[in-house]
Image (cartoon, rainbow, N blue to C red; front, side):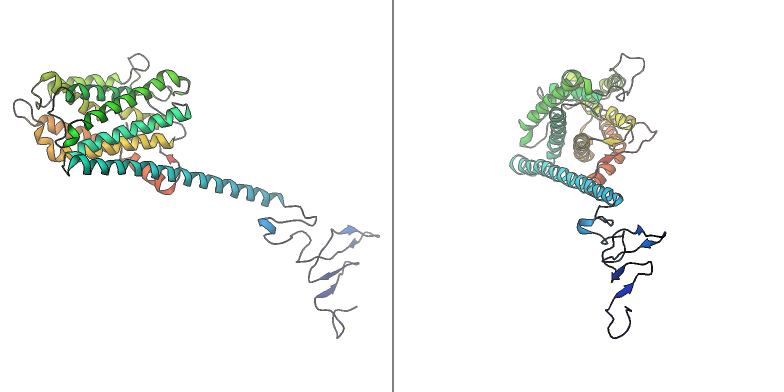
Length: 365
């Protein structure tokens, strides 16, 4: 019957291949060989015997037997995998926000309750950031039961920093904040920072030694026993502190100890930044990145303080060289961390892993 004329059905077409009709392209079983070598056609709903429903039910395409096309199935799995990674990243980002929000909330509490708006609070604020950073590092290590990505040499240097600073501020008051936080809180923060540093170092040396990456923590590993590369920083800085130090405590040992801690802290992160360079993947674990960022933030706060107070760091003869050297050392540390701060900001902003490029420059990531 022709599809034309008054009795024709709209959309009906005869199949020229013999034995089949289509209603607007309806259901079509696969073509099969006909007698005499021809083919017996079929009918299809929706146009095409193999294309199926465009987009399909649930996003897939189906062939004539209703089976999903493998390519589209892989695409669906890939989309689901990306969605899962994105959800995980957003969950991690939310945790980061809560963590830093808690730190800033505690900072505001200390500022209003113990500082009375005094400018010297920046010293306490910097100390709080350091303690916060080492607290993050302990959470990272003891929760994951791993010491990967952590420089033991940086921990060794910070242990010396907190120890020598405490030997000075416990005995004398010349280098304490002027506000109420200098009465007892600053001491407590430094003690807690020393404890956190010690527990992290113990994790690298004993508890999680099998996961410590000694092969990439290679700063200063020449002409010294393995693991003692930090001596190349600790020893020269000690000599400088002996000869160039302020005189606020009017005590050689106390003044030298505080100055040594100040100078040494400016170099203590160099092994960690060097280790970041040597990692093959360039990916920094999230909590390790927060740890380094917190130390850098604390250093930035102290730098702001000493920009306006460096003139107080004069030696017994009245020279301000110790103050200039303190400013210079802190400034150099911040310059070394510029790249890190940028990639850290981008990672937090985009909720993505922190990936550092490899450079040949010493300490700059």
